[in-house]
Length: 428
Image (cartoon, rainbow, N blue to C red; front, side, top):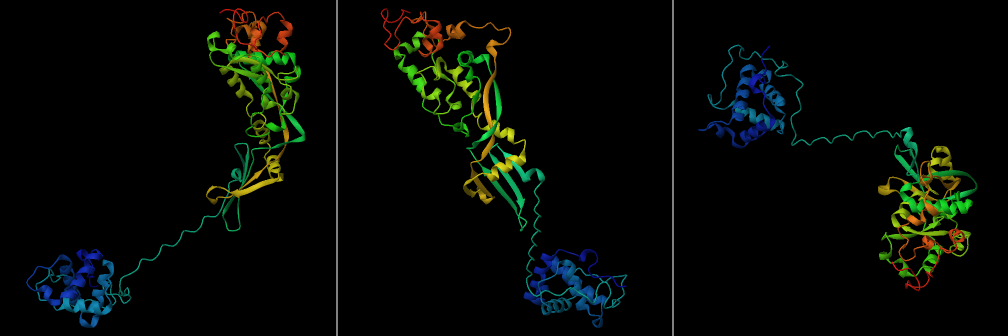
């Protein structure tokens, strides 16, 4: 069988040949006059000479030449243009190309239909080809893993995810920052340790609870069933300020420069209309106050922050079905889109069957091996102006405090009046 004209070095890239063939059409036979051929024209001319040598006119040398173009990447030429190129190349003067007559191939030995000139040739070009658009990848089938179908986020968000009829993932959230304790809610005891680091605060709380045992366990009020409770009016601390003229609080008279009025029980754990708040500083039913180092007051106050909201929800998270039931049964206050349209969020106010109760399970200052401080640490209180009220560490307390009942002779001066030694106050 005759060799194919595309054998060996005739197999080349497409872009160069398309431009070379266009050049042949544009210039014609004049391309061969007095100039060296560019490589791509030389190869095209060699291919034409070879096909005419291998195939006689009756065996369709034009078809073989057209087939040769196919491995080179095809062509934009229409059939008439291909014939025109072949005719020009076939009539080119001898010796213009690098063509050499094959020694091992007999002239006109090629037959139409052999491997160099098959009958089923690629269709000639009809002009510039357009790239076919890439098919869109098939849409992934929606699948929500079991652990993502129902979950709780940050205690106060129930998130449900599923697939809709169009195979899209759908997200629905139930969000709340306020809840209602059910009238028959089960108590959930939240215990904390009062650290010996906050000495003055913990002595203040333990001494107040000793005199008022009903304060040892504080049931969360409905007003605290929220992620953030606003501070209520502070009658007890206001009364303390009325009982102490500012001149007694000057920093130069005490060891600690930054001091606070610390109240117990804290307003966060009290009903706004309860006796502790309404009678604060007025009667023994109201809150107690101690003037103490600011750091003790504020760090100890972090212990009960949020206990009326988060612990109840954390406990309920253990029963995911009950948590879901609670959210879906709650009245919806509003509904809006999640960011970027990824789903919807319902703002709700659920009714919860758990009600936290706060208590200190341990006061480290009274732990075994520790020696209790005199008068519940009042003598060690660095906010007491010990140099000008030398006999009365109870200066730091409200006048209704039980300590004064047990130490009636400690107070020598009228603290409501300005400090004025020696008639009203000790000389430092």
